[in-house]
Amino acid sequence: MTWRPWRQAFLAAGTAVVGFDPSTRTWVTDAARSQGMDDLPPLKGRVVTDPASRGEAADDFGHLVHRTPGAVLEPGDVSDIMLMMKYCRTHGVQVAARGQGHATFGQGQVAGGLIVDMSPLNAVEVRGDTAVVEAGALWSGLAQATLARGLTPPVFTDYLELSVGGTLAVGGIGGQTHHHGAQVDGVVELEVVTGDAALRRCSARLRPDLFRAVLAGRGQCGIIAKATVRLLPAPAKVRHYLLSYPSVAALTADQRRVVDDGRFAYVEGELGLPTDSAGWTHQLEAVAFFDGPTPPDDATLLGGLSDEPGKRQINDMSYFEFLNRLATGVAYLKSTGEWYRPHPWWNMFLPASRTDAFVEAAIKDLTETEVGASGVVLLYPFPRARLQLPLLRLPDEETVFLFTLLRTASAGAESPQAMVEANRSLYLRARAVGGYQYPVGSIPTTPEEWRTHYGPAWAAFKTARERFDPDAILTPGQGIFPPDP
Ligand SMILES: Cc1cc2nc3c(=O)[nH]c(=O)nc-3n(C[C@H](O)[C@H](O)[C@H](O)COP(=O)(O)OP(=O)(O)OC[C@H]3O[C@@H](n4cnc5c(N)ncnc54)[C@H](O)[C@@H]3O)c2cc1C
Image (tube, rainbow, N blue to C red):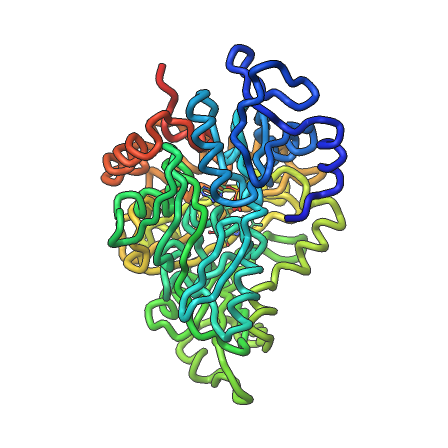
């Protein structure tokens, strides 16, 4: 394992943890070692309390919620997570895993508790048509390792620098979902450190209760240590289409058409904010895979579609260039500082029958000050039946749309607090038409509302939580299971 140099400096200054003092509820460091307090189990990695590590773990991509943990575990291997889970259980310390910290509303934070930094556990092994991947690995790393063997996971998120454990904890939706479900639907087996400090394997056949409570289970029953994910043959190239439409209804009609007939490998869509010279834009983004020199036949693929003539953009690129398409834009946003501004994101699934009217009303008076200069509005459908896991809650219709307002509190935009309030009221409106939250955004939600959200899945979720995290120490930042009064 490599240690970041600045961390070494703090460790040299004596911030390596040797124990937890239950009387003061603080972690005891080398520098402040007191007799009898050096009872931390022997670890291959280490636990640190330096301000930089704790500060990083007290923040996320949203920059809206800040809860400072007492300490951060940098595990040497999975046994460290088990040992520390047991230790924290004994001392009543709360624990949460941190992948890449790209949650937007404190979902992975824990005040005074222990954050498990999953990034050191990032090995990938390709075995036949599966990959066995440690949960701290990034989707970019998994893609590269599998593409070297001519294989690929079926579904990717738009941005590849998210951890495998982090997206499996929520679901993992992308433009390939209409064919293959969410990323959680491609998981064959998991290794999980449950809240009772046991390492358990689970799959659809082996301990299905745990399997179904961990995938999209938001870290409530265990920390995913390893996942075995299904792979498919990877294409060499893609042909990428951007098609323009005059209205939301025209866009969604063609999106539904191509999703129903499955002609493209990938389908998403984006609504572009009005400018001084033009109103909202509505674009369908689609991709067809190909190998060899002959590209897909445009006439066949675009047949019967009613996009605006003369506005088609068609480009060929390698499969990895396509997967990694956000990298250039992200580098630009980082260079301007925009990437590091607060991100009060709103992400919901809508029933297809209510989507057009809801989206039209939601964007009618929406301005750049409400979504920010780099804000993104996404809209795309998939068939509900492709998603099989009970905790990824979806509207009760055959076709479902993901609708997102990816807001950035840019300079000159509304305040982050105003954006969060707007998220809350739009959430209530979406719920009223049968919408379900995709829980990666920044929407204040009460435990009672989460209970309603899980509906028929709630009883099994709660039972699994009580069984696998009997002391209720895991992942409080999700706000699902309130602490006992
Ligand atoms: C730029 C960007 C683009 C995105 N694009 C998409 C997209 O296209 N599709 C999509 O579906 N989502 C997308 N997301 C949302 C993203 O999938 C989630 O926010 C995801 O949880 C972030 O992964 P992470 O590694 O940063 O997790 P973190 O933010 O570190 O953690 C998120 C939650 O998962 C828990 N967790 C993390 N690791 C584990 C583990 N090993 N075991 C159990 N629980 C764990 C944490 O405790 C926390 O509660 C995007 C987010 C960003 C910022």
